[in-house]
Amino acid sequence: MQFLERLNQAIRANDSMLCIGLDPDLERFPAHLPRDPSSILAFNRAIIEATADLVCAYKPNLAFYLVHGEAGLRALVETRRLIPPQIPVILDAKAGDIPSTSAAYAQAFFDRWGFDAVTVHPYLGEDGLAPFLRAPGRGVFVLVKTSNPGAGELQDVPVRADGSEEPLYLHVARRVARWNERYGSCGLVVGATCPAELAAVRRQHPDLPILVPGVGAQAGDLEAAVRSGLAGATAPIVVNATRSVIYASQGPDFAAAARAAALALRDAINRARPTR
Image (cartoon, rainbow, N blue to C red; front, side):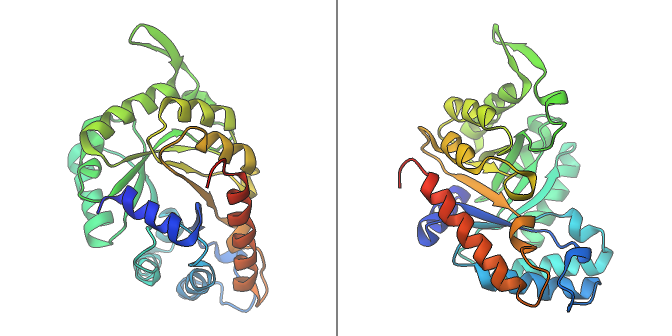
């Protein structure tokens, strides 16, 4: 089964386009948990058990595990195993390198660790991403317009191609669409902090799934992002929230608070969806 099919199944099953980021920051853990890597798995397990019926995906960020060395990587692998098999898991690695190196990354992320999808950057072009793109049944979300304040420094630079001028992020999105015609595994990453740009990408590519970070702590406009990402779309959006959900409380009720925050977000996304 292709990644997009699995994603759509999860969306229907849980009536949800919400993705929760699993980014363990020990300094923000509940006070009753030890502030060391041994707590990561217990924290993640509680979040997953409290929210698994409310999400269409989970998205651990590789950096938050690498920082703890071997213990962190063990926690990442075990976290992947905790997630119910019907829920896709996106590894946020923002990878991309020469083909031989990307092949090693793809083997690690997909074959060894069992992730369903990965985020990548497009700077090295198609050959650098081909090992990810051709992995059977996996998804590849390519950075197009990111949610950070400095995103426009490069992503908004005007480029001329095919006789017309457009910002680089739209040019990248067009290129990803061509890759998708060849491999069938592509999605886009466009931040909720830029709903106008999200709308432009969606008009151009109604048939590609879009991972939408930047709601919650980054203060993206949820309603505008949902409307922009779904207008005229035949493919879903995946709205990611991390800190506003998993750190909704630092008390012993942290899992219940995460559930309440996730439920509120899931329902807010559904209210903003133009069609159901």
